[in-house]
Image (cartoon, rainbow, N blue to C red; front, side):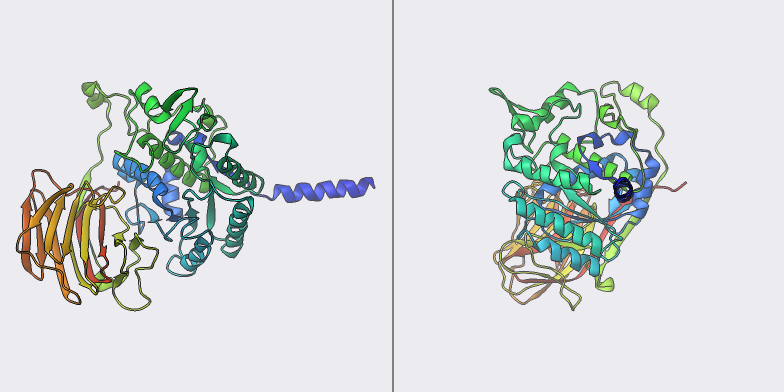
Length: 489
């Protein structure tokens, strides 16, 4: 009997030792300044990311863009992975873990990995608000389907996620379902990006705001006092200049910045970096290229390292020649824009829908041919932010409808009198030039309008083409822009 028990314990010890250690990315994973840069570079070389999310996921993107602005050479990412950047397919596949339902993401993942995304080796799906009203069986199904995908695609890493805070605290269903996900990942050696835990704590990590009815907005309630931990922390730590986005979807810029830091931290973990055991007790420090000094500019100038030599590069993409529309994603519609055949993008009729260029670029020239089959409103956007109301308050937007054409510059409308009116089944060739001091719009080689600007509209932003109730067919797209990139050593 003794030997049977001894053998049983040995076998189980062997099996348990074979389980992978879980990678739990949470509020202690925001200390990005302690990650050696060589692991960030290694992650960019080895990982090809597919990141599926709804509006909540824009927080991570906005934080990543802030890091990218501060240190382009280290935190660069784009669709292709060119230029020592991370290959990052944003909103690919479309939807989130609960949109349009709780199972659509499964088929979309298989379709991606068996098709155009067969080179992706890291897949991340985020929740919207669906965890809050999920049943135990709903989460169990999610966990089971994730494991099936892991077995089906053994070369791909799948990242589990939790749902964002909604103010219901530790007694609410959201917390219980998030705990269900955490326990599963912890006991089964999974990778978890704990979206909820990251926004449960401020950077000091001393207060659990979920116990204070914490919300994804960073609002909380303590007794009769209503507060916002992100704003409070920024006010108390004004001497630290962190890479913060100007705005963040559904939350505060600090929260978005922490999400992005945890994201890059996770990528470093996935390529082998082991954080120090006391990483959670270390202070949130600025990155090497961030500064602790705001007012003493002379001291800053003396201590700042010289910037690397740069070169000005003209870049362009001509989809009329390549016919490769993987650089585009859907916005405002769950339908695919890419037909099985044909060198076109198809924007469906109905509610406003856009074909969005996946890379954030400072576009200077856009050319495309479009045909509206039902005709209500045709729209193009350059260097904009689609996470705000439409028309966006920043960037350049052109609208063509049955009354004529209008230009929106940083939200201000310019009616173009006598301009071309939208007609059904009529092909239009659009050329738009965004230059310092003016915007020029041509249709079918004729000038529609030219507007002078007091400030440059050439800035990083979103580029999109689409419309409302148009059944739009887009072809012959070309984009030109310039980038300043560091010279290689």
